[in-house]
Image (cartoon, rainbow, N blue to C red; front, side, top):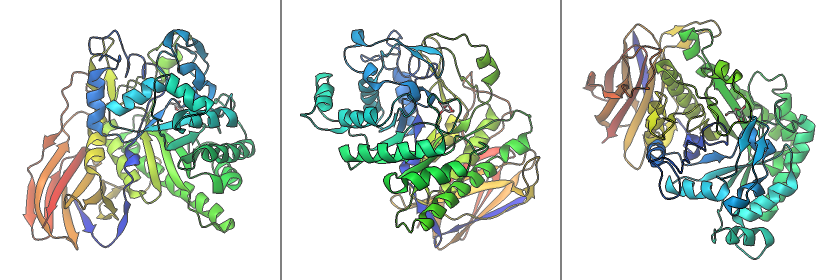
Length: 497
Ligand code: AHR
């Protein structure tokens, strides 16, 4: 099959906000305990952090990490997690029906985040708590000194403020499962007042209001509309969450699900802009896709989980090769919307629906989804170009006219190179992809890699999966032709003259 991608210098979509390569660590299962933190492991550093995990997270180059939840945050008393460890209370975590020891808390997270060269995106509890706890937390984290909460932080060992800039005001408040779930009207008023108060403490912060926790929520649309109506001028981003699965074992349909994400994002943008127009506002609310991933492999097993364990094995999806292809397609979709999606967090990062896993002794290993995320996060920096694609299409159970080629080009102005990410969704046909320049002077291909040749259901527990070089390239004038294998994830870097 033949396909084309025109790399058009004259139609940039947007500069990429690096925060679209964010991650997520929740107090859930073994994400924190036995994940990033395992003091009794032979891989632990002096602070108890798993050094193998640190090295792998660094490879993913995640500039921001959402913490501490998720559903967990809606029952979390942040004050429990600071101060001398011996004085911290053991609590029931109602979200995951686990035991939370609070031996890892906000100061430990801030120490860890520095080690991985990232930044915190803090979520506040809008379930069992509200405005007062949220404003005190901003004061604790960001106020320099001389007040009750800032001095308490200093007493607890952090002289310098944490200086956290990005704040989620609650989590999935539209969901009936959420502790302290609210109607859109109740939450709309709450997020407006809370965000206002948080910004009075520190006017440099940005806040995210909860949008829908999935596209198929019955309140989708109405929720966004009402919440934005109530809070538009006091918040900066609206969140959306989306998880996928291949429950029907229908791979063509599964790989087409990036179309669903595309529609979801477009729908939320439309609602934001409708509210903006109605309010005659000059302000633009952007999107924070602060939970996205594949989540289905572990669901059945989790139903058998016994409650009230410490760090139980929960949401431990073991990903396979086709999952990596979908993750690549979803990353491309996020890039296509980089003019409005300014934050996105792969949910999650370690052990819980994660690209990085640890064995019981702390030895770390990577899942297939690690690879596309690592490549896009490291090389997808610069400006996204509007993809002008020509590709044969197919239809699947839920989607019409799905292009076999899913691709995007990014120009990295500093490095003077164009980077192309591409998925060939055909399960049995090679694709001859012609990459044509409009406005750029292609010099040469400096790197072409492919992730292909594995069975769709193959996992990486034995570490046998790798990205390899692709040498099936022909260079013409202003044209590069490359052969993409069936069911493949690809990256091509072209130096510009
Ligand atoms: O990421 C796992 C869970 O998914 C989060 O806690 C919640 O916000 C979402 O439903």
